[in-house]
Image 1: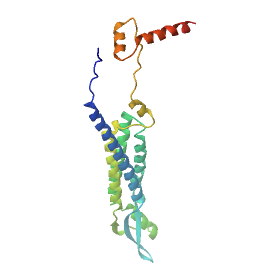
Image 2 (image 1 turned 60 degrees about the horizontal axis):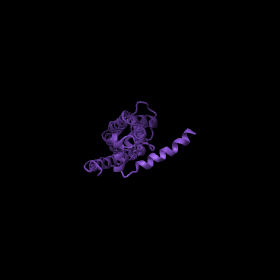
Image 3 (image 1 turned 90 degrees about the vertical axis):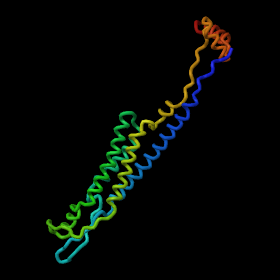
Image 4 (image 1 turned 120 degrees about the vertical axis):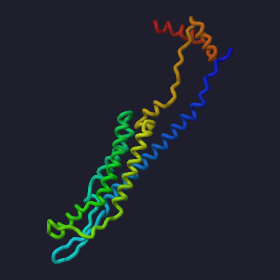
Length: 228
């Protein structure tokens, strides 16, 4: 008598390995892009975005500058939100992960839009001109833009890509703690001792190489102990 050969599972294993590998790659890419993009936005938004010339009575022309934080604080604020969402995406599952991933993507899109619009904003420079000249109606002339607004927008686009990766592949990413490892670890099935009154179970035990008579004798020896 021979045991029934197990059903071959080889065709499914390469697909499972490929899915896990793809999940790891997308996870690493999202973490790298999100962290890098947020760092770039925070650094670039603190640099000088625009410069201009203000006329000061008794002094003449004076150069005034405005950094990204003065022009608009939106990119830096959204970069901080993106960093929080990047961490939170591993603390939630299912619908919560989708919402956090969408928040990550929207943070990147919003920061990019605010950076591009801020590159043409003269309000911060006019405010600087009013302060140095003492004339509330003073404005700047000779507006000069630096590349920092567009560097900020580039970092924001990296955040956007990270959010899109989370939306597309986040369902296969692990969560925080050991729950994922416990769910993924193989479980050893608990075998019930063969019932001597059921012949089919005796035959199955013999096919597995077990001795059903030994297990039956052990149960009989334990019975008086339980009754006592």
